[in-house]
Image 1 (cartoon, rainbow, N blue to C red):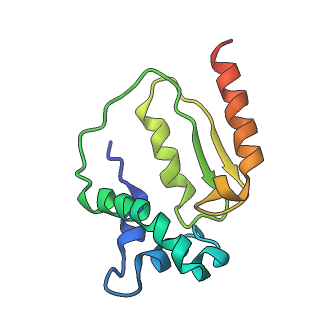
Image 2 (cartoon, rainbow, N blue to C red):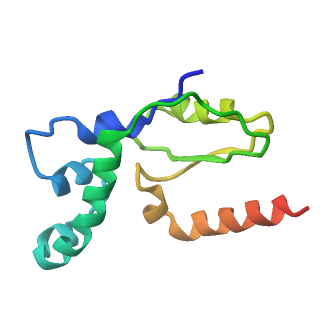
Length: 128
């Protein structure tokens, strides 16, 4: 089975056009307030650049099957197709859950309380 890093191609597309912050913002990852605050934006750009470097240098390896649950979460409005997210469940013989939150690629920011609540539920269930 082939598992791609689906965000890589979308994140790195059009590298010649626009700056890194604008590319990340295509996914809804940077608030307009942050985009306007150049000084604060400069403090987060190193982390974003590290993520981009990882995406650019990612080398696909043979997938390793695991015997533990994998929970796959996504955003209902994300540009990454939900069927591609579901492929992560093919890497385990003990599937977890597939769940879509309201929001886009950065759904954890959009639905922070719901994400934390769901995470805590899943942790508690893992000990039962």
